[in-house]
Length: 111
Image (cartoon, helix red, strand yellow):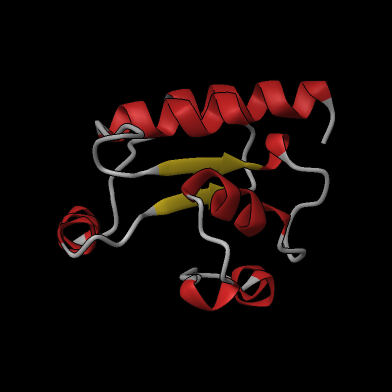
């Protein structure tokens, strides 16, 4: 993606009506009450991802425990670099303790 493409994408998302998936916040809250960490990972860069979180009213340390973006890792989906970085940030050494939830085949391949 070129710098120009990223600028167009950022502009498009600045005007997008952003809403969470139904029940997402309730699920995050239920998981956290059970001591289960919630990390979001995205193929977007840090700037766009943080903008989307702000528009949802979500933040790291409140609704979610970690945010990992494509701009923070060498390889994006379907390689598992973002999951591994989330594991490091959340101090989860055993990959069997991680569940990946997603809505694309790239998400499933990453997991």
